[in-house]
Length: 359
Ligand code: GDD
Ligand code: MG
Image 1 (cartoon, helix red, strand yellow):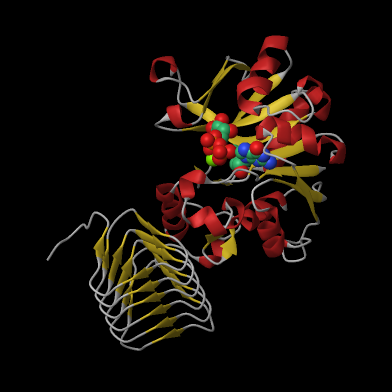
Image 2 (cartoon, helix red, strand yellow):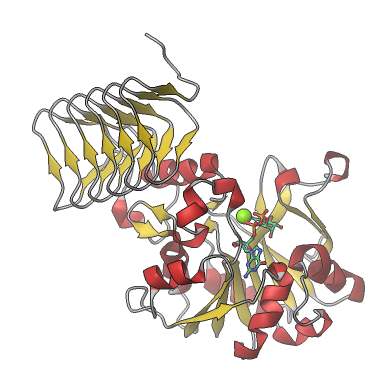
């Protein structure tokens, strides 16, 4: 069985982080995001190849993921000549599929029991099965209505508030039969959500829903990206990265250096080769990327710092995301929701973001 990961979007909502690092490989702790999905797919011994459907910076994704040696499953790259949308991308990859296929949006962090999902699909003899997640704000997603037998009766992408009739949305995980792709035009921009799924309902194909009971999150916004780290640190999400962190744990990679007078407030994560200087305070909910440096008496909490960045002495990060190789000046204060792109430099005493506390 093949697994097709739709990972060709440009990740606009995660800019500036995604200007150099495409969304599928943004780090979650110290691993590219896609690896977390691949770990989940490894649950299913039937999956023998991962097909990455790409468009935006495919070379950068290939440079990180390679042929799949680290991932533990062979990877095939299918690069569209131009963005074909989610449905066009599926059609474009179809020649490489060989029957029932698992499809993932390349930005969902989930704990779905894939064996149970595939069994549900087969038992129901479905043409398509979609995983549903309950959420508070369906307007940002694809709304999916079902009947009493768990068949999909309506699919409405990004519904207007007036059209919201339930709280179940498309979790971006599907089991599809490629012979239903006949309705997708070749080499044409086409949305799986706006056209293919509604067409299944219109034609009366067996289109079933599988309700997700475990953890689910689309990591595609800065707030969600930070939330993913908090959820893993708190043990709410136990995907393939469970060994990285857990509630009440301060995880320090073997090659990191933490000064004896530095304070690690659980939960937190200090990546390989990182250095934490005296009197610095890391956590709670701080993630330091590999090779990053936190200088004396700086505080990093509820923040994600990417590799090779330096946080100046006495600086304070609270609710920030800092890209690769940034230089944060001494005593700078970075407040919630601040997102710094790669190579940013902040002069000492800079203040930015909506600061939670102003002494
Ligand atoms: N290959 C390829 N080509 N991939 C694409 C393209 C394209 O033209 N456009 C988007 N993708 C990929 C993105 O990289 C992402 O992994 C996935 O398709 C979904 O795109 P998003 O841009 O993240 O969509 P969304 O989050 O607004 O909505 C989708 O996901 C929700 C769940 O998170 C929809 O599928 C919603 O129905 C769903 O609820
Ligand atoms: Mg998304």
